[in-house]
Amino acid sequence: MEVFNHKSSSSSSICSFFAFALLGLLLLITTPLATAKVHSHHFVIQATPVKRLCKTHNTITVNGMYPGPTLEVENGDTLVVNVVNRARYNVTIHWHGVRQMRSAWADGPEFVTQCPIRPGRSYTYRFTIQGQEGTLWWHAHSSWLRATVYGALIIRPKQGDSYPFPKPHRETPLLLGEWWDANPIDVVREATRTGAAPNVSDAYTVNGQPGDQYTCSSKDTVVVPMKSGETNLLRVVNSALNQELFFKVANHKMTVVGADASYLKPFTASVIMLGPGQTTDVLITADQPANRYHIAARAYQSAQGASFDNTTTTAVLQYESAACSSRGKCTSQNQKPVSAVMPAFNDTATATAFTTSLRSPKRVETVPTKIDHDLFFTVGLGLNRCPRGARARNCQGPNGTRFTASMNNVSFVLPSNFSLLQAHQQGIPGVFTTDFPARPARQFDYTGNVSRSLWQPSRGTKVYRLKYGETVQVVLQGTSIFTAENHPIHLHGYDFYIVAEGFGNFDRRKDTAKFNLVDPPLRNTASVPVGGWAVIRFVADNPGVWLMHCHLDVHITWGLAMAFLVENGVGELQTLQPPPPDLPVC
Ligand SMILES: *[C@@H]1O[C@H](CO)[C@@H](O)[C@H](O)[C@H]1NC(C)=O
Ligand SMILES: *[C@@H]1O[C@H](CO)[C@@H](O)[C@H](O)[C@H]1NC(C)=O
Ligand SMILES: *[C@@H]1O[C@H](CO)[C@@H](O)[C@H](O)[C@H]1NC(C)=O
Ligand SMILES: *[C@@H]1O[C@H](CO)[C@@H](O)[C@H](O)[C@H]1NC(C)=O
Ligand SMILES: *[C@@H]1O[C@H](CO)[C@@H](O)[C@H](O)[C@H]1NC(C)=O
Ligand SMILES: *[C@@H]1O[C@H](CO)[C@@H](O)[C@H](O)[C@H]1NC(C)=O
Ligand SMILES: *[C@@H]1O[C@H](CO)[C@@H](O)[C@H](O)[C@H]1NC(C)=O
Ligand SMILES: *[C@@H]1O[C@H](CO)[C@@H](O)[C@H](O)[C@H]1NC(C)=O
Ligand SMILES: [Cu+2]
Figure (tube, protein in one colour):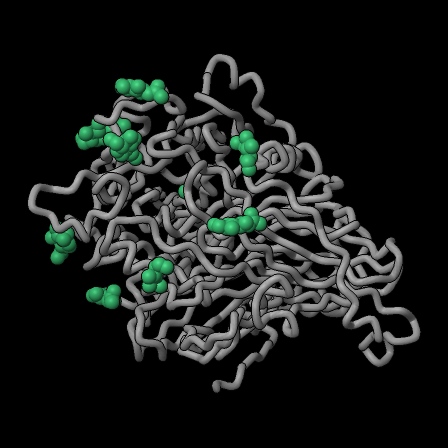
């Protein structure tokens, strides 16, 4: 097993100007040291035996850890992560939610910002965290490897800054994952071959452990210790592949303080909902009788009729009484935890009550009000008819079809000879086209009974071009083709304001009046309500090629994606950095 390597060192900023050096000296003398750090990490992607649900699998991990290492930095710090691929699959790593200002080469989605790191090769990701605080995470962005290749990225305030809430006594990252009693790569390959929906998972996990509701798992259930009266900042991440999740702590109220590494106006909730990709920071206070309480997550399943993993993962919130805390263990270890009553799987009302409660902490001045690109994107599934002569075993979708998915009726196809970013930066023709439609070619009742003639999208590698600094609004409209479903739509390289969401067809005249341009939440992943819509706004201030996609991996596999190409602006600070010398090419 690889030894996990972690070293941190202060960055030496090379400054040739004498005056600046002098100023630096003066600052050193007069202010406390608050230099940004450089954190170097070594990630070895490798197969490791992992036993869950009574069975051992040769699981792809980082440094033999499942989940992978937690990275902890401060706002302003730089990460240098050397990724060595010792697995038998292509791999890339995505730093989910990191803005990657001018460093798109380090973003990670395969064939978008880089070609994959092939077996035996390596690549070093270098990027700086700028103006983000809270919880993010990292994950593989190649096939379905992120099922097991993921970990937390915790960004604390700079030295001298503090949280906008009382400093918690403890902080606990809780990564919610999804486990197959199979090789996840085999699962997606089988689905791609047959055209059918992939097998659902066999368990959800908290920090890699299914918990006490599953076979062979009870003794390894994750325990979160707390002392009466203490406050714990739970950093909850939905790292599941294909499922929105409800999350709850039995008998404890949560104060929601952040999401996707942006702070929120605090509010109280007894249950929260996270789509894959989303993070939520909550404070809980140990204000209940000393006991053991379930921390639980299970599916929010918005699509009707589809099969899904209906199991429940648990961890245990365990009060330490003063007498036993010094030894770290309590005698009540075997006591059955108080269970959490979860919402019904299809409780859209609870999911909506949560997402519509999110607000920025105070009035935000940076919500774009003058819009340069007013876009309308449909998001949803489709079915491809099988061509005459196709084998039945390759057409095992509903009624002999194959599943597909699209945005504005374009099912996204990744290139295979160049990454989109490299093709853009080096002017290589023939890799993509810039004609992604600003609105659907055909309008129809998106949430009604959609004519069969509209179910099959076209395929393409189309991007939507933006000039540096332009303002963008996107109405994300779910369709009911095959089934209506909540889609967690993630945009790379940006945070966006979610100014509104609703059900039914977006009605520009009526719904525009409801936009929150005062204190909308800032996120990187929006939950587009089932049979409804969400409206996002952002400023195109980060040059590069940025994937926008559904974070249900089954949907991105089917093509529910597109990309924005953001041109350089004027001068160095508005220009994409040159590609690193070790950038993997195809
Ligand atoms: C998917 O599930 C079916 C039915 O349980 C099983 O036969 C098949 O082996 C599974 N596929 C994979 C890749 O695990
Ligand atoms: C989950 O689904 C199975 C069958 O698919 C069913 O037997 C079981 O009762 C369900 N469990 C819950 C908690 O709904
Ligand atoms: C949710 O599912 C239950 C059955 O489990 C059903 O009775 C109810 O109508 C469903 N609600 C919605 C909103 O689909
Ligand atoms: C499959 O075919 C049956 C029978 O013709 C029909 O009732 C059903 O709606 C079809 N389902 C889909 C998803 O096309
Ligand atoms: C890259 O692949 C595309 C699609 O297969 C092809 O059309 C294009 O010519 C290729 N470009 C180069 C430079 O090989
Ligand atoms: C949906 O529309 C088709 C015709 O486009 C019609 O045959 C069918 O009965 C409709 N189904 C429902 C449930 O309205
Ligand atoms: C999508 O494009 C295909 C191919 O041009 C067409 O058959 C289909 O009707 C279109 N669907 C929609 C929703 O526009
Ligand atoms: C791995 O990536 C290379 C491009 O860098 C590609 O040619 C190859 O097909 C990929 N292998 C798999 C198994 O996807
Ligand atoms: Cu989706």
